[in-house]
Amino acid sequence: MNNDLDINSLNQIIRLRRNRSTDWIREMVAETRLFISDLILPIFIIEGSNTKQSIKELPGVYRFSVDLAIKHIKYASSLGIKVFMLFPVIDANLKNNQATESYNENNLLCRAIKAIKSAVPDIGLISDIALDPYTSHGHDGIIAKNNYGRLVIDNDLTIEILKKQALAYVKAGCDGVSPSDMMDGRILAIRKFLDQNAYQDSLIFSYAAKYSSSLYGPFRKAVGSNVENENNLISDKKTYQMDYRNASEAILEVENDIKEGADVIIIKPGIFYMDVISKIKHKFICPIASYQVSGEYAMLKIASEHGIINFNEVFKESLYCLKRAGANSIITYGAIEAIENNIIS
Ligand code: PBG
Image (cartoon, rainbow, N blue to C red; front, side, top):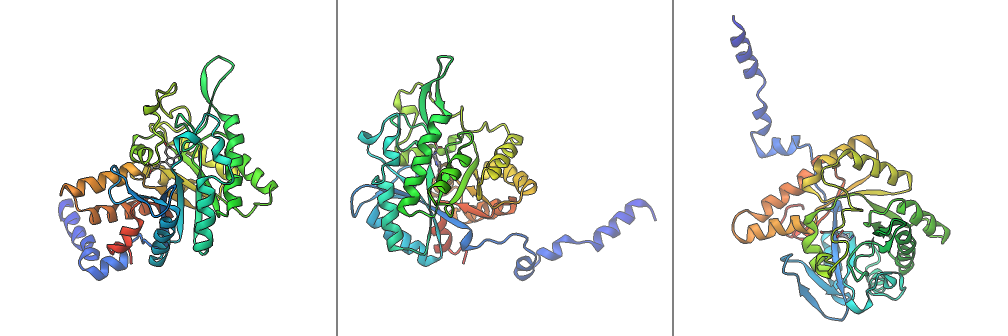
């Protein structure tokens, strides 16, 4: 017998296709599972009552007044979704460079948290910590001049505001906060401040590796925090959000945030950053949430509206792939559709 024949007969012994041959065997050997409890639903909150606004850039996603947000959350909860992230749309006249409205204990988000928590107490509410909904320029932090005379997003000044914002939100009743601002050292500062105020049980979901991504466009339209439209002196978020060419740096970010007391690590965006999820999964023992961001959702939705892809099939694939990469949970605008359309049951 020559070598070729050996290889041939070996091929006929090992036939990987056998485990793909029927539905039941594929189900049995599937390496990745998706559960309803993996899903986290973002909710956009607006002032007023009985108001529901569609968002052109995010077909099928709405901004809700608090009363309708409660209805929506009750419905999602009846389907089994138990974790929600809240994002407020703040009136332009309440915005300034110091983001003072962010820690007003009676601001829109605090009122929403109180009302939602009393109407639907058994759900998890997590609130975004960053100043972009509250600054007139749309940045996540405070603009100030540094000692070189350069305008910067001032790290330490910003942290002082973030601490107050976090305390206002947990006092209103949210179960956790998710700092998405990317300032250095903010997890430790927020953790200590919450602890000093006896909120040691509040969770911190840290956006540890948040990249400066153009996929956030539809979200910024949804909350009205677009930096480009503001005749801005600092026109993008590259001085604080990560450079998408870097992956090792994400390890440093995550390591710091775990040491600073983060309970859950968020990696954002989702699909384009699956290598980062995988690296973090192998390096650390920590729960990982992947944020499938607005631009990703919009691409799937709009391509499917044009008949180019099948939304359900591609959306399902995206959720499984994020889990396969190592995500424990997925923040997605399609959480309800995933259940309604039997992607997960
Ligand atoms: C605020 C924030 C952003 C997103 C979540 N929190 C936008 C940004 O950083 O500019 C984006 C989410 C999405 O695109 O779905 N810091």
